[in-house]
Image (tube, rainbow, N blue to C red; front, side):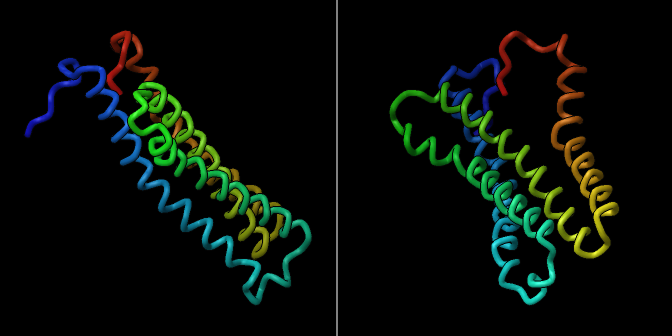
Length: 165
């Protein structure tokens, strides 16, 4: 069945489509975040962990917390939907889920950079670790946020007052 153009959708259809889009997007991020979190959970139980410095232990714990918080935010829209199911709050749900998902992506960016810092610091020391983590943070931020915000700004003057996505 062909889908309707966005301008032919009712508000309820648009909200349902928008929420479905959010959930589909989150399926990608959730997997990566959960894998990172699971890996970080195993680190203290590995043989080499006894060789890390207090500084590295602190950074490890920060990376673990960031990945846990990211996972929680990226899972939250599905739970929010279940809590609000059939309560007729889809507009509020879509708005909140979108913000929560972006927050989860931001925390994921920090969690990945912190994890890269931890490994690089263990292998090569603080200076290279900081440079590598900052590069990863910048690289990820450009693709996650910079490019879409650039496209959004570029087309801002051509968008209708209410957007369908």
